[in-house]
Image (cartoon, rainbow, N blue to C red; front, side):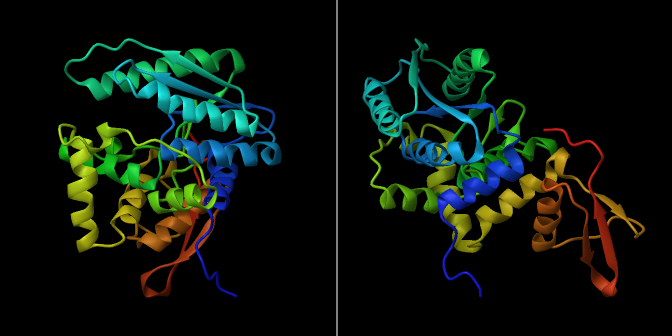
Amino acid sequence: MPRSHPPTLITTVRRTLREECGPLAGGCVLAAVSGGGDSQAMLSVLARLAPELGFRLLAHGVDHGLRAAAAAELDLAEALASQLGVPFGRTQLKLARGGNLQARAREARYAALRDVAAPHAALIATAHHADDRAETVLLRLLRGAGPRGLAVLAPRAQDVIRPLVRAGKRDVRLHLERHCLAFAEDPSNQDAAFLRARVRHEALPLLEQLSPQIVRHLNALADALNGSNLPDFAGLEGEPELNRAQIAQVLRAGRLGRSVAIRVAGGRELLVKRPAEIKS
């Protein structure tokens, strides 16, 4: 019987953790939290799934020292972590204002998180979702990135995992509402001085009017350009053109370590095999 409603955020994250972020059993995950809606939802879901998937969960927030409200926002994350029984910590930075602020803040944040994660050999979980990934593809396009530069925000990249990346912004908001989770709104997300804010609030909504599935298409593009997801083709000369559904089928089989047969134009069958070595 076909599904009458989309999967919950918990279901989507469970599948992503099992198929694309592991192995996790016996390890530790450090959830990067801010008190914002995305990270509150991620912390909530990871706390539910940690016992089931067998990993230890910690939560940590970084205050860049740029906004007075940031400390109160992290208080929301600490309150949720306490409610969920998740150990919580925070790092206070003093980041100087100036050029390239968002990039410098990101670098400082990851450095602080890695310092905390290192003693636990923990993976760092960030709360990027599918809409964030679509925005990042557009930002890279605007800056002239090539194919490799568009393969952004993979579910796992070295020591970073992104449990929400197969879920959309709407899935996150529904989870927050369903579980009555308090969260803060970062005003910089609305600041048109930042190019990402303009892409989020101007460019992406316009593209969604032209193509309602644009977020899904941009995520599929990032997957297809990810070097670890490029398939080997057997049984046909040349590289056939696959549609989005077929690409998704190939990538899913690859994540599970399986080969898959795809029927292509002319009724021919294409056997797609994974490379022997997969790089994260």
